[in-house]
Length: 537
Image 1: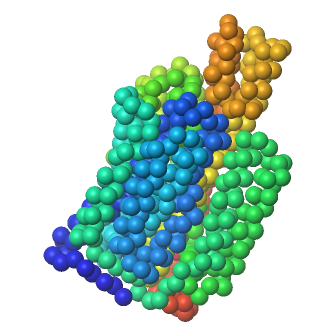
Image 2: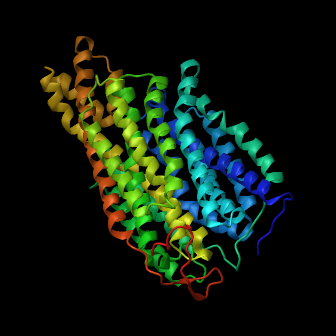
Image 3: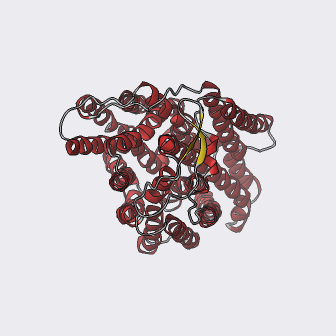
């Protein structure tokens, strides 16, 4: 049943819900860019390898990807307000642990707690909006504002981190989420209306366990394989475990009377398209931000604040594109806006493949602005289309599923592109050392250090008069890896554009046979949830 615990006019309740949902998604996404832009400083302080640095990002994203669906179901069963507040508390706990971290392992733990909080916040914020705003057209506007809050977190994160690192150490980037989360938790007690999903949904433990195993094993295998070799026994075991976990998840969901992710959702081409687009796009873009932050720090030797200004171009332009994209989705087919935005993103990534160590900010700015415009044009219609493409009673599950696959892509991004970056740079390093005039024992020592301690360890070596040439070779090798990552990211967004163009077809008015929240098969009529055209199927 639906439960409302606040009083006041409906308009005030909707406004309060929107504010709290925006604060929740802001807190959830703030660590993404504050940590991303601080990676070079973290690497210098903790002397981490590229693989360990990948885990700093993935320790946050992995719990989000693995548990976001369960958090959505838990909110449906036990109350979304309770899960929302729990997510805020977990975000504060994670930030507090990271604030005190003196080793990279403790930082991973803090990031993992913050990721758990984000997993609770993302589905509940959207569910709270859906409950408070039943009108499809008005809900589309609210989701647009929600997406703007998400992009705002990505925008201000680098500036917050850059300003802090100008004066104190990187650990202090984790201070702000603590009071913000705790204050929001207290405010939610009065301002947020509680709600539950109709029916009798239950937690799907077999589905949750198999999903968590599959996602964690896959990311672990990719990161460790990229750092070492994909022929290592532990890597092969991890990848095999990921395959088994995926197969087990599919079997568990087919058999469950209350599935975590109703697989009949994928009978909707529009839901399938937006899910694939979300996963592939975030794989490329989150991986790109990971690589770009290292490029600014290790190639251009920028401090965190100057790197933040450059990343700000992307997020500000994305915010500017998000609001009109939300309004236009009632007039223009999502197929056009999503495909067009992805093609613009692809073009921007390809334009970035010509960057070098001395590329100016002016030369970078227009490419980063183009990237932001393309990204912003995709985000709002992608989420809204996923929700609109399924029967009403499955809308919450569709939103959580879309978010889950998006986070899977986000977890794989640093893993895949970080592995490509390391592999390509290590492969190119001997050639660049020889081109710089370093051969023999000195070159062997540099290459061995890069393989055993990471590429960044070269900067800490004492090579005397050869230091400058070794660092030049490192820069050239890192650039080779960066260019490869940009090409791969562009190929991924182009693939996402293909799926959007092919699967987001002209709608057909037919029901989706699905398992309801109570666990019985039901045929749900097609409902126009956008207010402008029939739902995409």
